[in-house]
Length: 164
Image (cartoon, rainbow, N blue to C red; front, side, top):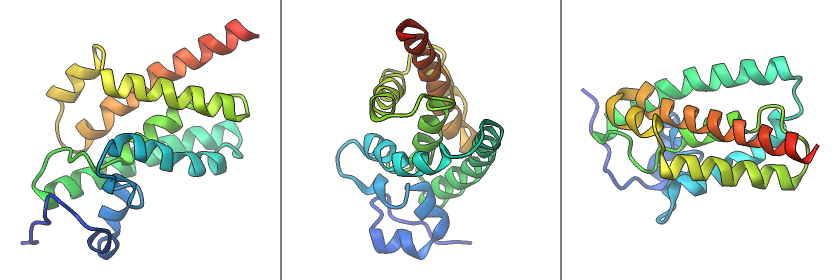
């Protein structure tokens, strides 16, 4: 049986376990304050790369990163013995990327997407909070952020249509 990892992981400990390294958003989840926000910030450079993809490929990337995320989050939380450790931020990465599906180019839209996603992720309006408390494992860790991303995406589209 694999040894439990401390609930206070270290940078070197994450690097030693690639699954944990990814689940902790390349170390961004180690932020002592607001690791979810730090993880969302860390997702932005990768979003800039993803944004270059045609829409179909971007959507496929969302499906793949979600599926991979279910595994990463489940494995890491089980290894740590802590369900949904605050430092596990892969779900924030995917949630932000969902928010940014087909978003217009520019820093204003990236910032607006960031703000919308963080609002939904932090406040967890229904049904996000219900999913967060009732669905467990890697899927549970991921699904509330996916729904927060979908709700933020809807707000992004409303803003776009309003400003159009």
